[in-house]
Length: 299
Image 1 (tube, rainbow, N blue to C red):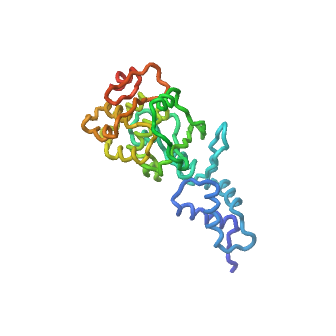
Image 2: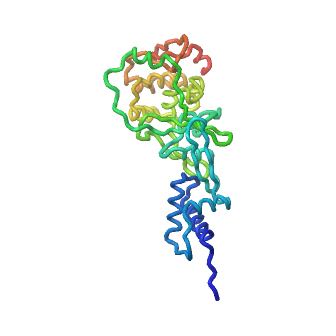
Image 3: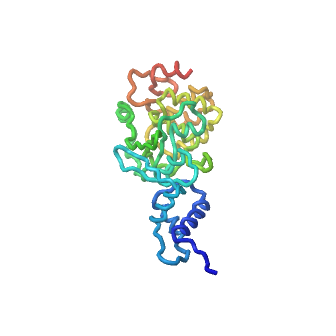
């Protein structure tokens, strides 16, 4: 009796399907998928010519085992990803850059700190480590830095109706980044303390200071002042963002006695809650310039 053998493509496809299931992953870059395909088919003996990884990938797309997703950009190179099984839009977002994580408004949504859905998903890819700034911080330097509107990332991508904004955030060694289950897989995202710090530093990536104040109010029961302070120290921002944090926390109803660790950092300068404000008022407690109507909105 003649032994039945599958043709090379069908054999390779079966091997790769098993490897995909065993990986537990749902989305791959082309290089990662090629590595997986090669690992699946290389040890297997074939009669005749062995198919290449590219040929196998094309076959799997044709058979709808995997899907080729193209995340488009009007100003930058499109990003290709390959999906196996069901994936969430958050999983696609987190895959756009290696070692990236979701942050700012998107993290606030994941932690149920905002009832408003972010119009874009924020993906943070940290910069390489930079030398610390030289010389003492001056009031004039602070005034200059916050005189104009917040700069916005131009790294904007689209997939179907969803937009993604890729941020090149400060190098923090991924301080405060955790894994959160979304759908069937874990997604890297900033924890609550890190999220509150990030949206304080860049309120434009969280819908503006009014929405940031609302997020702080929603986070009252989840706020750990010690964890917030430790994360702030780990990140080591140049500017005195502890004053802005203190203002938001006060506005959210946290007693001043609990905010003593933040005050202990010191208040040496007048600071700003936002960039490019017109006719702000100065909060005496935290020495922070804030929009004149913010207390009315957030009270």
